[in-house]
Every structure is written in C-alpha cells, then in structure tokens.
Image (tube, rainbow, N blue to C red; front, side):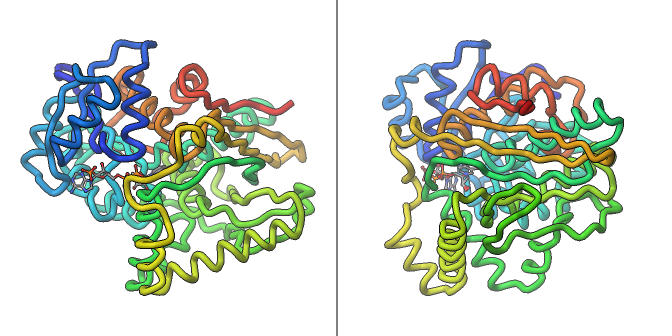
Length: 401
Ligand SMILES: NC(=O)c1ccc[n+]([C@@H]2O[C@H](COP(=O)([O-])OP(=O)(O)OC[C@H]3O[C@@H](n4cnc5c(N)ncnc54)[C@H](OP(=O)(O)O)[C@@H]3O)[C@@H](O)[C@H]2O)c1
C-alpha cells in the first residue's frame, strides 16, 4: 500500500451522475480528514462541479480514460482511485491497467461480469506483484449481497461450527430508479453478448469470476420466472442484479478459502406482494430484455425512451429511496438464520455513492496489510467495511432475531 502521496483519494468521473453525488458526500464528510481531488476528461465540466458543489478548494486533474500517460500521472498522486467512468467495458480498462502497474488502490461501480473477468485475466497477477488492491462492484451491486452473505456465514459458523449450506437473498423492498449511465452499461452487456456466443456461455456460469482451479460444480438456482416459493412462503420474481451479485458472492467464497463450503448454494430474487405482481413484473423485465437484445430497438430505447448518460433520479427521489434485502440461511443442523441489509437512500445513487466512498476510505485508512490483487468487498474489507457503512453510510448489516 502506498504511503507518501498528495491525495488519499482521487474521484475519476467526478462529473458523472453518481460522481457528483459522491463529491457532495465527500465535501460534507467530516468523520476523518481526507485529502482528495476530482478528475475527469473535461476541465470545464470539472470546474462546473467545483462551483455547483461548493468545492472550489478541491484540486482538479484532467485525464481521458484512454490516455495512459495522463492516468499514470494521476495515479502517482494518490493512494486510491475511485472510478465512476462507465460503461467500464468501454472506458475502464486503461485505468485498471495503470492502477495495477503502479500499485494504486482502485474501486469502481461496474456490474459488468464479462469485463471483470477480462480484468482478472489480464491484470490480477500484476496487481498481486505491485501491491495494488482492486475492488470492483463497490456499489449497490454487489456490496449488500456480498456483505449480507458474509455476515450470515460468520454467525452460522459461530453458532453451528459450519457455514450455512444454502442462502436465499430476497429483496423485500426497494425504492429507486436507474441512471442513464447504468442503462448504458446494461445495454452494452446485452449488445456484446448478442455478438459473441462465447460471452453468452460465460455470462451464465455462476463461478465465472472464481479463480482458476476452484472446485465448485454445484448447480445453482436461476430465478428466471415468477413462482410461489414454499421455502420462504412468498411469491418471487427475477432480480436484475442477481447476474452480478451471485458471481461476486461465489468469488468471495473462493478468496476466503471456501469459508462458505464447496457445495454452497446461493440465489437471489425479488419478493412480490402477489402472484399478479410477480408475473406482471417478470413479463415487463422479459420484454425489456427482449427489446434490448434487438439492435434497432435497443438503439431506440437508448436514444428516445430511457434516461441518457448524465441523467438520473432527482435529489428528492434519492432521499425518498431505500432498500431492504433479506438473507435466509439454512444450516447443516437444520437451524435457520435470517439477516437483513438496509439502506437509507435510493440504492443505485444516494446509497451507492456512500458505499463506494467508504470502500475507498477503507482501502486508504483501514487495510495497510491487505495484499495486492483483485478483491471482493467481503473478502478484502469484511468487518471494517460493515462497520464503516453502519457508522457513515446509512447501510446496516444485521441479524434478524
Ligand atoms: N454498481 C452500482 O450499483 C451502480 C450504481 C450506479 C451507477 N453504476 C455504474 O457507474 C457508472 C457511472 O454511472 P453514471 O450514471 O454516473 O454515468 P454517467 O452520468 O453517464 O457518467 C459517465 C462518466 O464517464 C465520463 N467519461 C466518459 N467517457 C470518458 C472518457 N473517455 N474519459 C474520461 N471520462 C469519461 C463522463 O465524463 P463527462 O461528464 O466529461 O462526459 C462521466 O463523468 C456506470 O457504468 C453505471 O453502470 C453502478
């Protein structure tokens, strides 16, 4: 981990929708003294953020995501880079490369499994050598899922000496909307998968992000449709973030030396109030995915129907947003455990900005001994991040009695 740098954190993508929320959060953050700077490709846009957020004293760094020299100069100045420059599959690789090479810690908001897989294949060894700690998926996907499972397993092991064999995560309540940046990232995954059959195969593998040589082969449940689930006594429907969250949870298990067991079962779905709601939401999601998979319709959705990059939910909607995710664990002795992870803002922006910032602070201040490499939030940061989120981010990870 680097020690002598001008900044603790550089926010790359400070002009993005989520980046601006994050800047406001950091500007008002007083729990620790943080030396930070803002970076992006456009000096005029960065200056506008300085004025708009009242942070004229925060230094600016201009760098394009494809300009390796500029990213090198940026990384030399900081312990950690936060990146909100997405879709990451289009704009993210050079920064990961430079961070891995220069021993600079890094965290981002990608939910793009195919891109994470490519970054692991190309740069994980470099990061292990340089000491850079890279943490993808440090927002709503996948921190609540990753930490919720991790916390439940700690309790299962303490109580029964073994991890829970099966955990079901069900989204009980969620209030929020997607930004143009998130939609652009989702549409890009669908577009890439449409062009490449090998990518489609890769995306359905639940263990795709586990290190090579893992020994998991248990078939996992994939919630593709509405159903009444007797185990939880509720109607369920597909949860769009399951595709990334489930893969991150299995990677955590592998990085934690099979802490959750080699035959661990994990699946995510949303709880519905009734069969009618479950089926109508499932059909709506199916129609969206079908439309997104057809090039001309996808382009029409992106240009006319959905929020564009830079747009997203209003400040009022962010304040009214929240999430409540439940984790139901089945232990080997027949006992059951329940945990919940809740957030006090809309999941994708208000809460995500706080989770991403706390991930960066955790890397900068709490983890001097964590080895270089590509970590998940739970495997790399565990209890330190749980504590930070509860104290400073309105995100609680707790057992339900
Ligand atoms: N994991 C989660 O829970 C979660 C939640 C929210 C968002 N996300 C992801 O986070 C990312 C950001 O979302 P958003 O809605 O905030 O996006 P956005 O508003 O569209 O912002 C994109 C950012 O990328 C910058 N950018 C684009 N091309 C660049 C280049 N060549 N060099 C440098 N910067 C460049 C833009 O700079 P300009 O302003 O100069 O154009 C802008 O700052 C997306 O990938 C989204 O999927 C994830």
